[in-house]
Figure 1 (cartoon, one colour):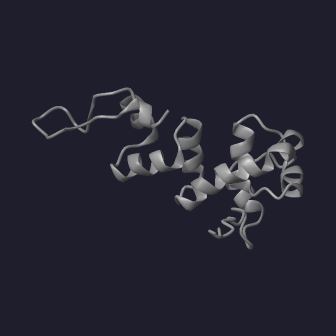
Figure 2 (cartoon, helix red, strand yellow):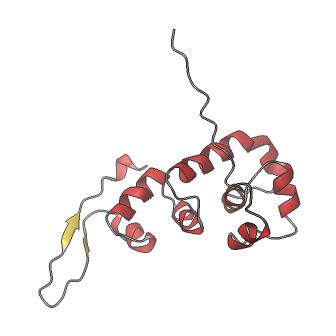
Figure 3 (spheres, helix red, strand yellow):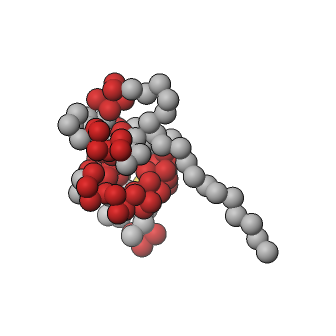
Length: 138
């Protein structure tokens, strides 16, 4: 019989990360007590809020929201930049791949549709083509 380890990821709101961390993520100060009561850190709270959740509604989806935020945190994107990638419709793994290629969020959105050029296209500088398979990121 297989035994599985508990893969809980601590909240992004680490000890020592006070009000300045909530302000960095732009969480409305009046909502902070509600999110904290649910055990959400600033990254989780803003990600949930961006997905249309309020503290009152998020209580029923705590597990799923934490799992989503944990995937971003484990990928090293538990930051405002990670939120931009999430809001653009990317998964954490996909965002990490794009970032490793040196592509920002806006360019990745444009490139996602198929063949597009990346890099300068004038003055004889080299460009590379990236092929993105839509079905693998659906």
